[in-house]
Image (cartoon, rainbow, N blue to C red):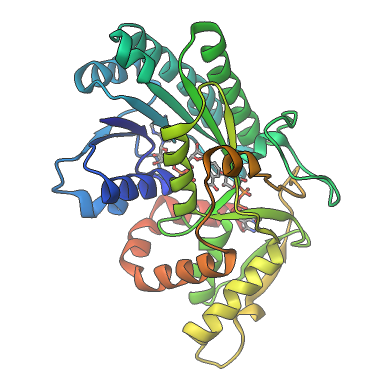
Length: 351
Ligand code: NAD
Ligand code: DAU
């Protein structure tokens, strides 16, 4: 049995679905169900005894301690976080609470559980912390891609809180011997992505005839990875990663934001042309830039490939086509996530 946190979110949800499609090993899924958590993503597991969902905060030591004692998982994978950079700028408090204090409390709960395990289970146990490339800071156009030895230079409240959590995880290994693994991944995209992030926002706005908001000049570069490739990397690191090591995960797919948006528009022009015959790209609108906007991220994932034999299955072209098709097909999921709190955020952010 494994315990996953944040498994009702975008990446955690994909991870749980993929995990149970490939094995019968059960998953305890602990999620607070913030605005970003969505049980619709897990609807196919509703009557599946291998999936045990518990609504709880990773910072709640009493509940997490009880769950660990009851289910005795062989691993904990920590996806739970506040994850949206723009929200971290308008309200950093939740990011410190969940990403820093929450991770600290989770580590303490797990340490207490792990310390009392029998020798063999103790040696086999793993705590895998899911982190981001944003902790490394921003690159100039001619800088080499981030390796695992790059200094941490986080620039946003989000990335600073994730950097803090990475340091806590490292310290719990170094000081207490907790068997940890950390992954630092680039930008994900794919099914079940909450439409506050660039790619799903652009797909849905395009279809709704709304503006496609480009921050600044749209020349910021992100390194895109299809979410299912991130999930396969996490499974591989859990299986074979060396305790105490960190692994960069990326798709070797650096793209300026404007190119990403044009690619989505071109796919939609073919799949679902506008009624007026015009191109979706006509909806592109330049808006005020994100404060402190990082210029470029690029991940060097060669350690993961060399040492653990992992490679992404999708190119950006195949992954983005699958993603657009998924959003066209899954209007039911879209309808459910785009009401209430979502509408308030969109009105406030793009006013
Ligand atoms: P997400 O915002 O879609 O989902 C986060 C999930 O965590 C939600 O289900 C939410 O309800 C839950 N959660 C939030 N606070 C919680 C708390 N205190 N206790 C329990 N559950 C809580 O995020 P995501 O995009 O799926 O990201 C998952 C992880 O991967 C995060 O740690 C993020 O930093 C990291 N990451 C994301 C990306 C990306 O491109 N999305 C890339 C690299 C790393
Ligand atoms: O790099 C990994 C990170 O990728 C993860 O750690 C974060 O959790 C995840 O949210 C993502 O962060 P970004 O800030 O890169 O993602 P976002 O989709 O918010 O923005 C991608 C780029 O697009 C970024 O340069 C900002 C820009 N953008 C975003 C939005 C929402 C726009 O130009 N317009 C928009 O409306």
